[in-house]
Length: 625
Ligand SMILES: NC(=O)c1ccc[n+]([C@@H]2O[C@H](COP(=O)([O-])OP(=O)(O)OC[C@H]3O[C@@H](n4cnc5c(N)ncnc54)[C@H](O)[C@@H]3O)[C@@H](O)[C@H]2O)c1
Image 1: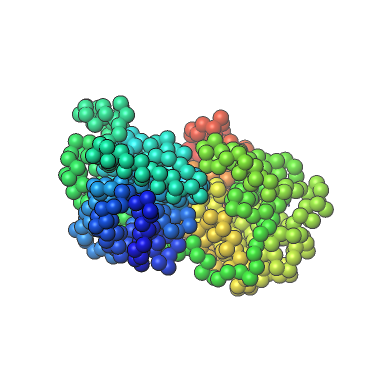
Image 2: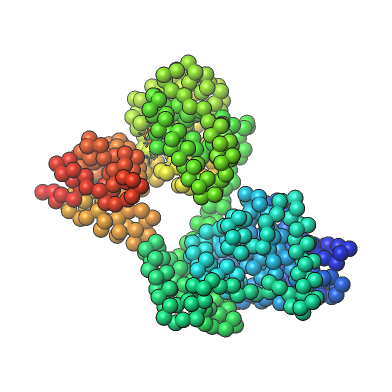
């Protein structure tokens, strides 16, 4: 046994060595300078022991193989040249793995991302566990980068160009079954059998190498017929990459240089020698790393990582049961993310129709996940089994169920008097420690808790639509909110998988307040006759994921109509200008946005197209005055 700080090597009697990565004082392994230096020493050590026939490279961490490169190391670089040098260094280590005299098998349990997957790709074989935490991907594009340690060279050669390109361009990771179908990995094992499966694989590769003199799996070049045509026929290649560029542009609107660089790199690598391709990869990595887009995305990454910890300390108790009032778009979404993260949930609506709609929303979303193999049927049934639905029809049962909740999140209509009534009743039922949260979009929390007996237990928890997809959660505290309620809200939010920001109370809080002037301006443009598509396109081109008119539909036109007066009252001319009548007319005609199947856009039969709100009901594109 050879023991380092980051890497240990165990010599087995069957002459297979087990290399274990274990970054000290960290839950995950990252490819840091010290880890890589030790790893290289281990390769030297193995070379000095000719009796070793093969090696298994694995991690001593729970649920993590290698999370990626150490980003602090990248962000410390001041110039493109420094970054390129770092990439070239990484490429050399990957080549040392691939050209090693004995086979190295990556045994992967948990996350294998970025530089982690580049290491795994350089190995002669990959065995992964079937654990749901096992995911493989190259997410560099999300940091405005491309994989710089030969990932753009090895991934297309391992799984084929046409399979690799979408993964490189989206940064999406794949789970074990898909990884096996793509031939990204050679086999999937039960977690307890991972090491033995990898040892078996290393032994088999060593035996084959002994007979043939060549280690199978060293830098393969796999290609489907389509890939071969693209790689070899200039005309086909040009067409393939032009189409890919057009499709990418539709999503990025040209705002992300990394996408163009990835496309150019993979295209170049179709014909260039490996040495030329890797030199270009390192150069592009260096150039991208110094772009403001990449620097901003890296900064966001650090911010998001910091928000995964509860900086207000652990609450004094576990908050296990969540009550949700209102089974509308938001309430059902909040219930879903809570259920999926293991909370017990009581979902209440005023009537059966409302409750049924909400339950249907949850069931439908889970069914989609099952269809997409993001969970299996047993798991989705287990999620639903933690849900109790109640209504005012059986008020006594509803009260009983809510009485034992540790936290209740209210998501009824945006109406102050209704919220007062609902929360006043709730406060009589629940336990003294129960945190009461309001998912209001804009009503000040101090107004919502006026008249309540325990305002110290009240916070705002402002989720975004669709709740199961949007990462952000805005927690709002008042002067009266207790430290316990604040830390409980943050803790629950983090457990629900959200990025939680904490802000002080005020009309529109942070998010609605900064969004509203833009929405108002979009409304004004509509009234002046600018087409819906032009407004949305302009803002998407500017970098917004959806345009403001589409956002009206996503939020709900009725919800928008309730928010607007609150902000106008608080901020006057700064938040007004567009005719509020236009949106009120749309609401009156039943055009509530996505939830009613029609708004500015038409969502009938799952097809999205620009809708045609009735004239005479404030048609959005009519020229006013
Ligand atoms: N839609 C958004 O994008 C969004 C985003 C953040 C916050 N919000 C806020 O969330 C809240 C709900 O919004 P929504 O879009 O889900 O609205 P919605 O109209 O889809 O749902 C409201 C639900 O509350 C139910 N309800 C009304 N009175 C009730 C009562 N007394 N008891 C139990 N249920 C009752 C209704 O039947 C309905 O099902 C609002 O305060 C809204 O401002 C909405």
